Image 1 (tube, one colour):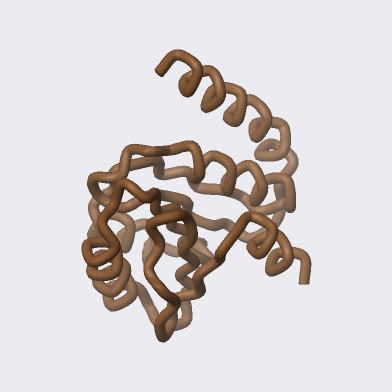
Image 2 (cartoon, one colour; image 1 turned 180 degrees about the vertical axis):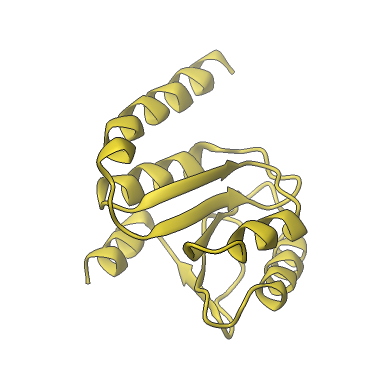
Length: 138
């Protein structure tokens, strides 16, 4: 646990200077209810900040209705969900579908991580950080 905490703190420190310089679109970055494995989310957030996106970091274990509230509050141009393998696939798929229904259709919903369900209508799934980076730089 100590080593994990050190790595997570390191990722937060790496991201901070990029956050301060970011001028791009605002993206909400979070995890599903019950998902506490924040490492992937911090890596994604650091990549987004490095690419100039302004990350609204909601963190782990967020209720779906609260994620939707942030996504619909204005100024958010996409919602990014990191899903660890600790979340059962059926539960992840149900939560992602519920979130997609709560968000405006025009608002992109990006998911990734070992527990992410297959892509579906209105949900873009990323298999890796490289795939996300390719999308960000396209």
